Length: 370
Image 1 (cartoon, helix red, strand yellow):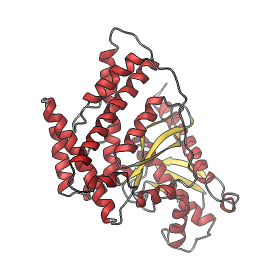
Image 2 (cartoon, rainbow, N blue to C red):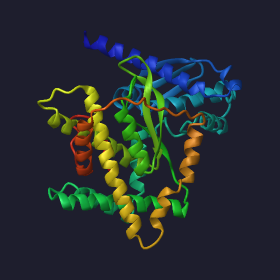
Image 3 (cartoon, one colour):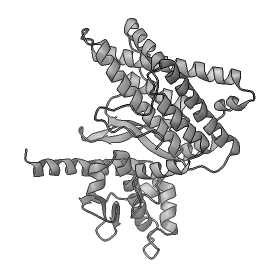
């Protein structure tokens, strides 16, 4: 297939994806809005100064070609939702004589759960998260960076101690935020890629992130580009710093699992089902280690600092409920597993040390604590 034809086919798939994501956004609206809100045209163009643009005269939402081709799908959806808010302000609130980002637009953003700063000359979702995360710097975060670097030590005892201390400081950092109850900024990103089917190890890893890394999560619908239809993806919410850490841990665990499975299965020729068992074993083993460390923190603490770990971040809970007013939960089916394969995974999970500089073999892993 010629390059021009490949590009055209890709952009047609993306345009269909934008249409599907528009349906998803509108599906959650109240009926009084939904019944009068019609789907616009979609286009992709080269735009130097904007990530996206809504045209009332054309009834068209246009997104930047660079955005849709070179940025993650959650960043594309972030801009799309912003432009849908412009459409909503014009066609539902009839705000034709207001400033583009005036009162009606902000009201539309609130209704649609859109970011009012997600387009125009603003940065993309992940660029904004990196900026916000960097602005959260303090002495504790700097210590976490240094400890994550020490976690790369070839001395296993030194590496284990550094990782344990890093997790302790991550907990302290978040506990202090909850204690002080200062107003915090929350963001939401996709973890992994949207797909039509998720195996049980994906759900196990999502629980690990929610249990230990101060984020909330939901399996939400999202467009699967290569399948040309909607699938599902894990979306996590939290402070910019916490979603960055959780995202990194997710990628680290997936990469570690792939490497160790390659070694374990070298001469065995086991199936994908057994790889799932192996991955769940690694996750369970690592979770056991983190629980043990957490228990040790509580025992050795001179005050009640770590008792707050069990207390919910009310601000995050409010943000999460606002973003997902109609929450559904999903449960994986119980399946048979290979006990020996899972035990091998558990052993490796207990030995796993999260470090700062693991290579991701070509995948776009987000950097930790930049």
